[in-house]
Image (cartoon, rainbow, N blue to C red; front, side):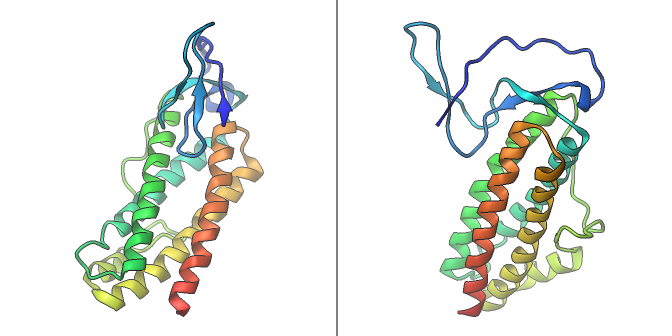
Length: 207
C-alpha cells in the first residue's frame, strides 16, 4: 500500500511535456492512501484522482505511451463488449469481463494524466494504423461481430492474444524510454497482467 503526502501543486509555465513535472494520479492497482493533517483520518484515493506530483518529469516517451495505449485499450473494450449476446462460452465471457474491468480504469487514469499536462486524450482509434501493436483491423472486427458461439470464442481469443502481445511491447517501450513514475508503474502492471492473460488464453485455445 502506497502512502502519499499531498502537497500543493506548483504551477509550471513550460509548454512541453519534458519540461513539466508529471502529475501523480491514483491508478487502478494498489490503493493509494492520502493522509489528512495531524490527528485526521486517512482516505483511499479514487482511480484517476490527481493527488500531487510525481518525482520525475514527463518525457515525450511517457506521453506517446499514454496516447497510444488509450486507443489500444478502447479497442479491447470494444472487443470485450461483443461477448454478451453472441453465445460466448463461460470462460471467454468471464475473461472479457476481467479485461474490461481492468482496462476501463486504466483509460480513466491515463486520460486524467494527459489532461494534467494540457493534452487531450485521443478521440478515436484508427483501424488502419495497426502496425506492430496487434490491434484488430476493421475487417477482423466485423468478423468478430458476425461470429457466434464457439466460432466467436476462437476468434476472440486469437485476436485478443495478439492484442495483448502488442500492449506488452508498448509497455516494454515505456519501461525502456519513459521516466514518469505513474506511467512506468502502469507499464509494469500491463506487462505482468497481460502476459498472465496471454498464457491463460493460449490454454483456453488448446483446450
